[in-house]
View (spheres, helix red, strand yellow):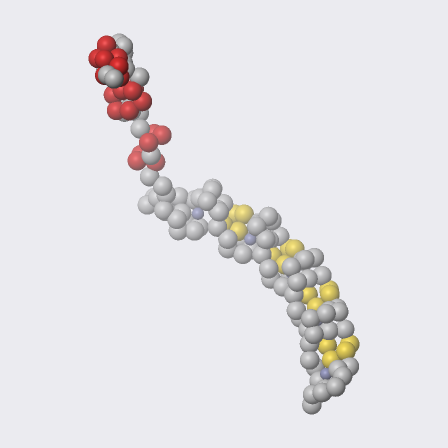
Length: 137
Ligand SMILES: [Zn+2]
Ligand SMILES: [Zn+2]
Ligand SMILES: [Zn+2]
Ligand SMILES: [Zn+2]
Ligand SMILES: [Zn+2]
């Protein structure tokens, strides 16, 4: 049965045909009690998860190392590396720090382009040739 002329609304739901309108919902927190529609406000957070609609938030995870015990979200910190440099919890591979330039102690001034531009030679002396080079008009 459909209501051609006039629905008999009870909140968001027509009591005669069961049609739902998107107004006057009967909100219970984030969820409408009548039609189960959810809205993105007044969630009932249990840690990172809303107990009514199941939505997740990133603020209240229950972290166990790198992984949330409730929802399984993973963060990129406090990994639990095993012998093969893989995280036991999330499976991430451990980054190889030896190839990171911050850890390269073989760094030398000779390879620094900035060094050349300043006109100093490999012994740290100011190079005359440098002036000649740049004074060419
Ligand atoms: Zn109706
Ligand atoms: Zn509703
Ligand atoms: Zn919710
Ligand atoms: Zn979580
Ligand atoms: Zn991990």
